[in-house]
Image (cartoon, rainbow, N blue to C red; front, side, top):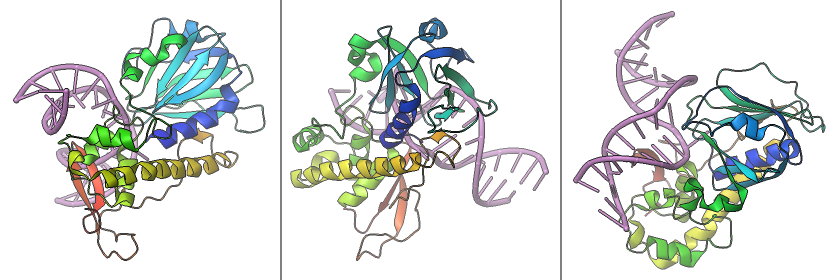
Length: 283
DNA sequence: AAAGACCCCTGTCTGC
DNA sequence: TGCAGACAGGGGTCTT
């Protein structure tokens, strides 16, 4: 589920419950997710105050007052929920433990943070805050798409000479960090570019146009996620899921939404993943 | 070096 | 109702 906008939504939802609070208890209910948990993880977390909650690409980074940073990745099916928050923002009682609740933090403010991940493609690790950027998983990441270092020149240079479909290039986390299958499909639709087109064969002008489109697609999605955060009282405290309508993703066989286009959304498989696009107006 | 196949794991949905 | 198979929003690793 989570791409950059969802992870950012999760971070924003966790922030009031975690930032400045102390982890009183860390329950680690199994030895691993995708990889083994770090050595003595529970002990290294217990009693530590979360000084900041950051995001890099699809990773959530919780800086601790011990000089370590907890890295969290939600994989495909990871979710985090907040319950019992005393600040009045989240009024839920602690729900009954669910299958696949692998990690549970009880904070000193009464909040409980539950990490649930059926498929266990998620990950957690502890790293030194000062050298966090050099962590194996973070060092290979390209620029943040919403940051200043993601700009037209960067994308043009990254695409130059690449013989791979633009769909694959945009999924490459070393080129842009944080895009996933959904928002690549959506961005290519808005740009009118076929996912099959080779990255290196797109005119510089069209590549440039893709940059603000990517930023807009992500910003719009974060905005939608943010508005869902307001509904936590009615919802169940689950972070990262929100109503979102896509132009092409999941719309195989349905009519193209571009004004003046009477095409139909199709689906193809590229590097093992579904690409949704309009073959008529995406060239 | 770049590109593609394969793998990790469970849940859900569809078709028979 | 059961069952098989396809598929799912990620990404590391191995092979060509």
